[in-house]
Amino acid sequence: MTEPEPPPFSSASSSVVEEVEIVESLTLIPGLPKDVAALILSLIPYSHQARLKATCKSWRLFLSSKTLRRLRLRELCSQSHLLCIFPQDPSLASPFLFDRDNLAWAPLPTTPPNPHTYGLCNFTSLSIGAHLYVLGGSLFDTRSFPIDRPSPSSSTFRFDFTTHSWESLAPMIHARGSFACAAGSNNHILVAGGGSRHTVFSAAGTRMNSVERYDIGKNEWVELERLPGMRAGCVGFFVEENEEKSGFWVMGGYGEERTIGGVFPVDEYCRDAVVMQFNDSTGPGCGNWREVGDMWEQGEKVRVGKIVVVEDHERSGHPGVFMLDGNHIFRYDMASNRWQEESHVPKRTPHNSAFGFVVLDGELHVLTLLNAFDPQETRRKQHHKRAGTLYIQIYHPKKKTWRTLITKSPFPHPLDFNTAVMCSIRL
Image (cartoon, rainbow, N blue to C red; front, side):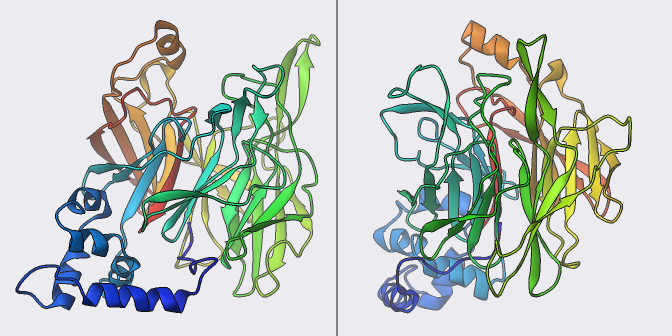
């Protein structure tokens, strides 16, 4: 998640003039000055705006304009921190936004459907400004043979929170799922590695080492120097070393595979990380890959949990990198190149179900279901009950304290955190 990007493919100045004219012509709250009425409406949380748009035409136009976002940033210096959860294929099931501060949920529309593909998973989602991106993934294609073999996807979709609609963007050069992805500081998105593995299969699938950069303003992908080795299931993030130099880190995941008895495929998990360094003035991807050594001591168990990154605005170049492995949270120390135990999740998941792990407003959020279930058993018995209640355990890395939050799930089926995709949004 980065700061807002300028409107692509159009003139920003003309759109601002049009919006000002629209707002000046609206009567938002009779009897109040227009600037005061606009300021009052800008205080409405995003999670409640969809319901209020039906109040009248002027509210619908104002709540759908970019003026609303500018007012929140300029006058209120305030942004809403939201959590977006994709329960499964976003073309079939609506993602939902969770407003933690107001304990409110708001649905988003599904992505444009494709009649030939189904079962999209292992895609990546990230937000930049007032836009939400869905990239790649693995899916089944009725036009491929054999029909039950998953294929990677190169599709790129973007959701505009102002127009409340999806649009299809230029596809990636190489189709991929389970890949590293991060947004740069100069309106670029970098993707690295990936493959074709699908959640239906516990192993196998392809791996790749290609790296690409997406230019938001130009709506085009450019191929960059490849990773030193094959890697999939990895995570990517940026580290700003100074005002001009940054580094794109790719960490975790699995590389080459081996077989047990020549039959059962087993992943070889990566024990190191790689970094591409570049200058912001020339754009990302202008450097070479640097390999970081083994992050685990000899004989130490290699942890392969979910990894998230907490941005530290007070200490530029020192993000907090955390891993959730089982019930343990580890923090990565860049100086020593080692993972160190940070904390334990207070409440374990029942029935060995999975945790959801995401960063929201600088805090680690560990999600689970109070009425946890076995995903395999649920699919086998074809249960179709509501997900019930979400239990969220929140860890503050600086204060080293835990707190909890309980909310009802809006989804029609129980969430499987092994396959659900989550990202944080700042509006």
